[in-house]
Length: 161
Image 1 (spheres, rainbow, N blue to C red):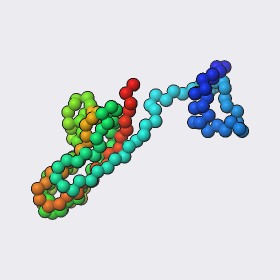
Image 2 (cartoon, rainbow, N blue to C red):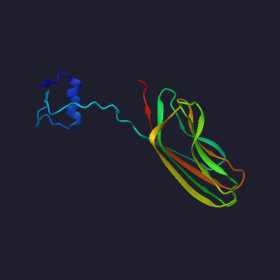
Image 3 (cartoon, one colour):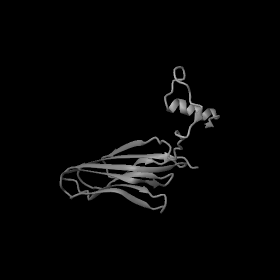
Image 4 (cartoon, one colour):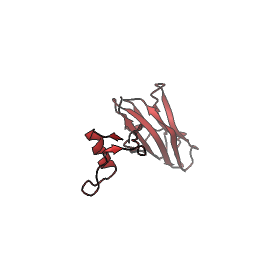
């Protein structure tokens, strides 16, 4: 049997396995049946960020940190507009870290001069890596009427190795 001599490993076992050392003994050896597990994908803090816009133009949903990679898990876009609104589309965009190009993440097309309420949600099976130091933007484009757009994103930062 292998003996565990690293105090950091013993502390992690105690905390993560909820072992009460006053009542239960702390395992000091690994048997043939019990094997240590290395977590290759560490726990990440998932961020949920939203923005609302009711004027024409762009607003930053998230200003991506310039020193960390940001991975986008999902995006939701909701719009409500009046019959007098001449908007053709509303979109969320970001800069792809691999191609270095600004790309639309989600787009909602509208019927101009028609009252509407729409929502679209997308979850990415593999998160999208967005470029450091750029913005995820919510963009409205109209010249008449009223429109309110709401965007919610979820994702996480990863430190560089």
